[in-house]
Length: 490
Image (tube, rainbow, N blue to C red; front, side):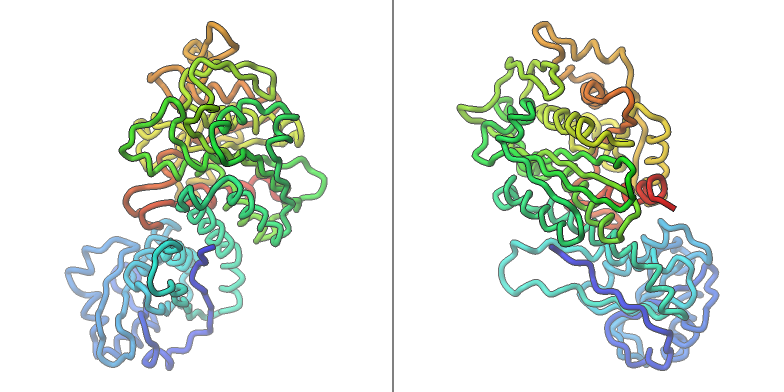
């Protein structure tokens, strides 16, 4: 697993600044008002800092932007990074500032002169998240661990304590990114399950259900999707029991390790991106890692369906009718609408076994959600306003884009089947909505539920503020915040 850069908090020692190597970052408030740290740097650099913050270029910067002074006189450091940050910045600006520092420093050590900045932890988290680099399959010299981030603060012990939970978030995001970036010949269903079993080291109870178990349970829609692959279909159950006797929150993930579309095969161009079609399961894994690492005082169960959708003589076909664990029958119109067939069985199993207080499913489910929301927001569908609003609030607090989408009985007409209880697709109009409407049929009336269509946000072709190109880890921090704010015991 790729690890975030090590972060250490030390008491401020301005006498050590001159001999510090790598990049020295200093936070400067809007208007160029310099604190003790900036004044010391200014003296050491013979006024270079003051000239910079009084320059027209500084005035053009927004809160969270960084100005670099290269090879400053009077310092052993190779660069000084002046971070423009409001005296009371919001979390997004603080994290963006940290991410800018990470991009600027590259492989060099980073020392942050933090002083008493209130959002310092978010600055450091942004630097840790943007420092991710997936290099497992690059040959040549072994990848060096990310250089350490040293943070000088007035109260190092308090700053360290305040960063513990954020460090857990960073680790969970990195796990999700690793899983989503991994090629399908490496991350088979078996390998995926093995990696999830490693969560036992954190105190998570992990159970792997094999195909024989799934057949006994009646998960025939999930099994249909994977029957054309040499990789066996599996369901992995991960339980974190930190909240006493309460029923758990259930997190459900679509884990299609590769999606060819099956018999309804996808176009060749771009099919290599379908290694990310297990993004929902990857996000659940990262969230469970974070929740367990920080020892959340809540009960959370993560359940993921792991399959591979391949064309083969044994593969399921358009026109087939398959029966779900619930007992409903589904006419398969398009074998490339496989994710909902995986999720519906896993969702029903979660409710039958755990009677959850709430259920959140995550899936790279539809291209239609990308048409509607682009790559900035996940689609949020749900039968319960309290749960939906709690998630939207959590996502906003973590700077992870999410937007509420509608459901309604009118859309049911599009998935009405002549030969079965429902079809697995309803045509092009409102494609993301009819997919969610399909899933809602497998939600019990008493179960609060939201569906997160993350097709546009799980992996991106160009870098974001907090992530390089590829897997983003979207949702790990929002789910962790949801658990912390709505489900943890006081």
